[in-house]
Amino acid sequence: MIQLDFYGTLVAASLVLLLGRGLVTRVGFLRNYNIPEPVAGGLVVALVLLLMRTLDIEVRFDTSLQTPLMLAFFATIGLSADFASLRKGGRVVGIFLLAVAGLLVVQNAMGIGLATMLGLDPLMGLLTGSITLAGGHGTGAAWGTVFSEKYGLASASELAIASATFGLVLGGLIGGPVARLLIKRVEVPGCQNQQAPRLPKGFEQPNKERSITPFSFIETLALIAVSLLVGNLLNGWLQGSALELPTFVCVLFVGVLLRNGLSALGLYQVFEREVSVLGNVSLSLFLAIALMSLKLWDLAALALPIFIILAVQTLVMALFAIFVTFRMMGRNYDAAVLAAGHCGFGLGATPTAIANMQAVTQRYGPSQMAFLVVPMVGAFFIDIINVIVIKLYLALPMFVAL
Image (cartoon, rainbow, N blue to C red; front, side):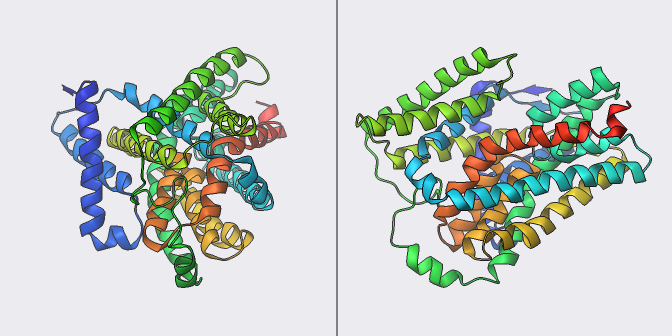
């Protein structure tokens, strides 16, 4: 077994990003279908590690940096959230929330229905629905424990982690092709020519140059650090209460308060270019570590019926993005980018959604509306809605009787 320490893992993650950039630049298929660079590089490394494992060689990474990077990314989302801009997009956010809620209902109904048809416990269908797909590893692990302890479902936690891993991989793979299909139906050149002269905001077009200074960079770094510190303290205070929230939601919430509170008091204006640089660095490194450390053999261990359910869920996600999300959001370029983002966090996680959208906007042009709506909905509202939907399903007679 090869064990990489903190520094070795950081070097490996950096090389994964360079590999991903080289692959997307040189391989037309990856470029044409807008596959995010961290996904391309990370999956290649994960496949190599899978091959090495068949030769009895296992590589383990130090993932201690993964959570701080994820939290730093969500802090930058909060620091990018301007209430004035959010008010402008209020109606769009509301419509997108309806689409998101609709997908959660469909995912659980599909999971339960397929599980029943295949002769499995309906709880397995619920676990391969919105719990692990829209919810990700954290939500999946939490509910897996509940299903094991309260309902006696064997290996629920293992199934949850494997399902969430499946979703993370597929969420990063189908978003680009879905967007490519939809963009053929809209007038991209007009949208691109109109918005190209302006400087990209937030997480749009991460490869664009942004002027920064050392002092303003340190100011932004301090804001992120405060968001992490206070967010973790807030999470500790809420533990065990009715208001308990995931840590990343608390960090994002503190970032929103800092951004808008300092602005309202006239004390400080957040410099978005620094926020976007630090956010994109955190996002890229987080995805690289997450994807290169994927244990793909966990997916191979999935029983065939569970694999069938997850494969159908992936198809349902793509169809939902094309025929529901795209149409509800206006059938334009922004709607196509939103559909790619929805694939990302509908199957995987918000960082995957952002990476999907960046891969699209890097090629076709910026979409300010998509980068306003998806981070807030995918990072905050979806967890709240998902809990409500899951509890409503558990209130059905088939589960109450268990």
